[in-house]
Length: 146
Image 1 (tube, helix red, strand yellow):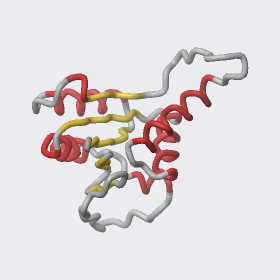
Image 2: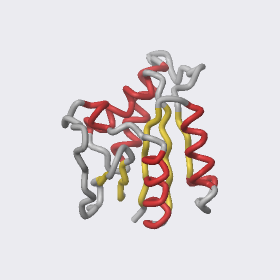
Image 3: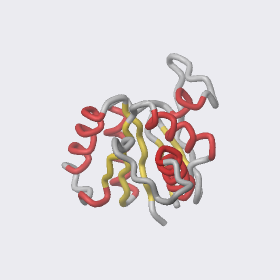
C-alpha cells in the first residue's frame, strides 16, 4: 500500500518552502510534487477545454489515491483559484513527517475549502485508523492510503 500526504497552500512560494523542507527529510525528490494550475494549458483534442481537462485529470488523480469526491473538488477549486498543492508519497514515517511539515506551514483545511464540516476555533481533528482509500488528518494536510 502506498501513502500520500496532500496539502494545499495559499501561495506557490509557501508551497516551495514546504517541498524543500520535505525533501530535506530524505524523501526522494521524485516522491514530492508541487502542482498549481498551468499557465498555458494545451488542448488535447477538438472538443477539449484546457481548464476542464486539467480539473478532471486532477480530480481523477485525487480520487484514485482515496480522496472523496467533495475533497477532490475542494482541492481542484483551490488550485483553480490560485492555490498550490503539495503531494508527498513514501513510507508511513515519511508521509507522517511530510504532513507535520505541511501543517506547520499552515496547510488549508479541506473543510474550509469544501464547507463539508465547519472548522471551529480551538477544535481538534484527531487521527483515525487509516483504511485503504480513506484519509485521516490532523491540521490541514490529509494522508491517503491507496
